[in-house]
Amino acid sequence: MCAARFRARGGKGTAMKKLIQMLERRGLRVATAESCTGGLIAKILTDTPGASAVFEGGAVTYSNALKQSLLGVRTETLDFYGAVAGQTAEEMAAGIRAISGADIAVSTTGVAGPDGGSVSKPVGTVYIGVSTAARTYSRGFLFAGNRTQIRRQTAKMAFRLLQHEAKNMKAPSALKKSTQKQKKLLTIRGRGDKI
Figure 1 (spheres, rainbow, N blue to C red):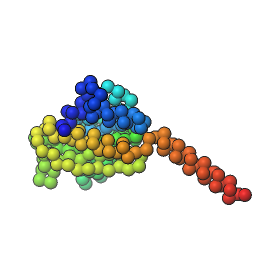
Figure 2 (tube, rainbow, N blue to C red; figure 1 turned 90 degrees about the vertical axis):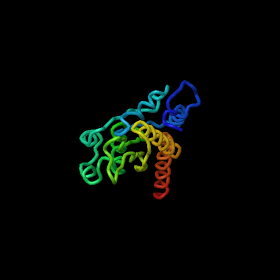
Figure 3 (tube, helix red, strand yellow; figure 1 turned 45 degrees about the vertical axis):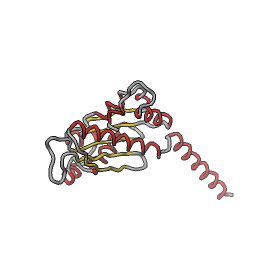
Figure 4 (cartoon, helix red, strand yellow; figure 1 turned 135 degrees about the vertical axis):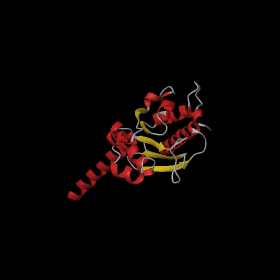
């Protein structure tokens, strides 16, 4: 399935519509930080009616300078690993989640081509970062095709990771209730210790 399938077509059966409905049911908000996809993920999301219920917003941070100033990507990370790296993708995702207050953030950085590739990072090398309150991680991929195809495959995979993460997350309201229950138990135990 190409990333274009995620675009809303006005029907209820689209994959993107289902993803948005699932995020809304779970009370989860999303943010994006994009480099190589240039805003494609945010576009596909906002092409779908109802996206405002789950999408906080996104940033296209193409330059290293903006990755640093806006998202807080460390100079040391860029100097040591480069812009196209898992570590950079992770810091991008964590940065946009912190700025937006979203529950889940995804980021992309890579070499979409046709130029810019190297022996160690050929055209098609992409890293996608995911960040939640519980964890931040990245996945690396090597996609084939032209610039448009690489960007679409990246968006497709970002949505898959987003969907996977959302399915395994507790809704913010459930987390709040769980925390309140733990505090109540601690209070009760505390009272019992004093008796």
